[in-house]
Amino acid sequence: MKRFFPNIGVLLILISCSIANRCAPINAQSADWQTAVWREPQVRYLLADLTLGGDAAMYRNYAEEERDPDSREAIRLWDAGARVVNVNDFERKWIANEFGNEGKVLRIVQRGTNRTILGTEVLLTTDRDLQQGEIRTILAKLTLEGHAPKDYQNRAAEPNVGEALRRWEAGVRVTNAAWFDIAADQPELRVTFHGSEKPADPLLIRLNTDVAYPETNVRYFLIDMHLGGARAFYHKTAEVAHEMGCQEAVSRYDAGVTVTNLAQFERKKVNGKTVITRIGSDKRISGMEVKLGSD
Image 1 (cartoon, rainbow, N blue to C red):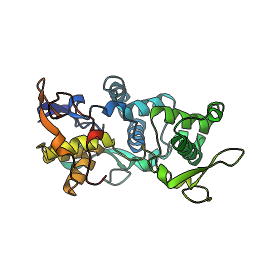
Image 2: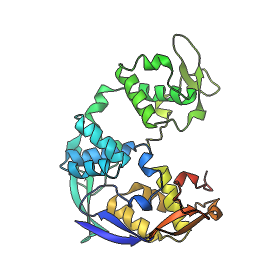
Image 3: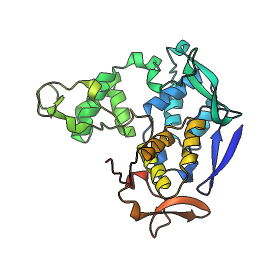
């Protein structure tokens, strides 16, 4: 069952009978949202839903038709045989929510409770075949080097190296690279803490896939609210559709995060659809053009 709500001049499709993380149609999101890298917590949440009986055809449609990054990665893993190891810890359940259809929303919760889980609580069968610490260390090297060295290309058949290179090509990057250096020790480069010879702790290497929301959409939604878009809409969408980008945007808005280059943009209708553009342009912006007081 689909419900339609008007927002900034467009119709928003909320899948009220699913836990899909949809927030807005293509024109109501950042111009580059489809090319952003997937978000690991959301991918795992979707895989938990699929393992517990969620509609694979729906996610496949999001992956193929809407080119949703999280659905693309979830379906890729699903088709490759990835399943949730600790599935008995969770259940797919309708829980009370004032914003939901008939006062309910469908969520993946901790079994026996109404607490919606985090994707980081989900263990996948593929996790047992890879060493995440080594993958993160390799990605740190690639981020610091700015490219994939030939020696890694020659080792692509190794599972951890191959996975790191796949993620690198997909746009996965280390977000706190300034914390680290490369020590040119032989036989291969080592990642150390910046200004130190101590090896970097892989647990402290942060990736742009670690957060549960696409930063580009968060900034787009945030500037929409600053230019007159309804906070209540984004709050309701976060609650109904379990949309983490909307949730994060509302959280920042409520915390008083400002847009420092707000004067460069306007909120207007283009071809009947309300979008955020640069002043004097009809081209929908990328959220990454938006500068925040928290930057």
